[in-house]
Image (cartoon, rainbow, N blue to C red):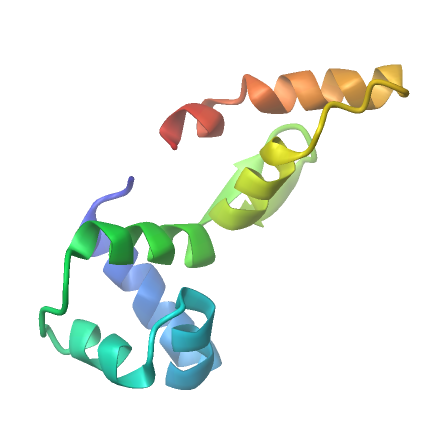
Length: 105
C-alpha cells in the first residue's frame, strides 16, 4: 500500500474531479463519512479506508497492456481465468500474474 499522504492526494484529486457524492459512492461510503475522513475525523479502522482509496483512485502503468490502469482494474485483470484457448492471450495472462504490481497487493 502507498503511504497515506500519497493516498490523501489521490483522494483529494478524485473529490476535485468527481465531487464528494461520486467519490463516496465509488468508495462505498456515505458523503458524511468521506467528509469526516477528509477533514481529519476518525471513523473506524483506517487501513480499510486507505485500501479502498488506493484501489479506486491510484493509477499504475500496466506493462502487459501498455496502458495506465487504476489499481482496481489491474486487480480485476489479474483475477480473470486463464485463457487456455488462446496461446497469445495465455502468455499475456502469465505475464500479468508475475507483474510487480501483483506483488504489491
